[in-house]
Image (cartoon, rainbow, N blue to C red; front, side, top):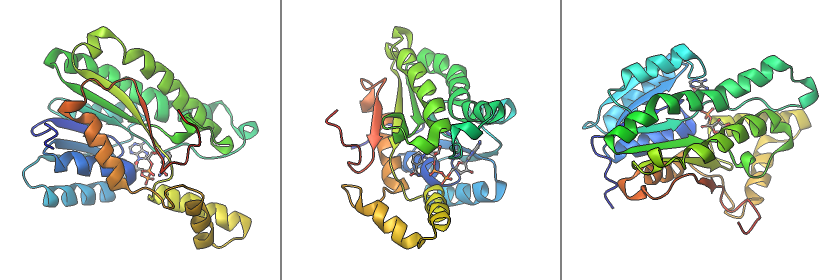
Length: 262
Ligand code: NAD
């Protein structure tokens, strides 16, 4: 199926690695031009070069910067001729016990995982509506649906974004103008972040990292971790011309891990 994305411009935040990169690859594969961002220049430029080599017909622009800051967002927006597709993403907050978190840690989590996406949405959705096409995909977490105790910063900040988006997506001036806003909720995906988290947990418990990863995979009905490519493919589907009636939804991609019927 042709997803109708050829010639669209996509701003994909935090995309030098992992799930963001998977989304950029899938969108470029559908013919969308992409602006990708990340904080680390070397990895970002390497990813941009790989994307360009794989998809020579599309434009690939790389913007170094922290998307959680006003400067990082301004640079990303300035580089994108127009934002037809916005994929909001940033690194997740660290795990821990809420008794140890001070105000600064909460503010950092809110900046990265709630306010940055809201600011980028604010900067782009009215232009999308005026042009009659827009797709916003926020990468959140399965922890929004099934909170994970040690990820309190993530549970809190991402739930704030989710609540805000639920209202915004239903504004007739957006939904009625073919602008959709949805959240993609990853379960366990085989990215650098997951590998590091598993290795750190195993080291702390004095266990073998491979054995811990195998146990985690075995607990997922799909018996494996997801791949960034399959995450990106679902993102591209949400961004497709055909998905204009799909908005305000939280879509869990977790290999069946969430145990509920709904
Ligand atoms: P990753 O560490 O593999 O990649 C993160 C990417 O984001 C990198 O390119 C990094 O450079 C970039 N980045 C991080 N913070 C940034 C910032 N402030 N500004 C610009 N770029 C930034 O991580 P991932 O596994 O792809 O995770 C992506 C998001 O999904 C995170 O918020 C993570 O918490 C969430 N998540 C991931 C999983 C999983 O299993 N991988 C599960 C649930 C939620």
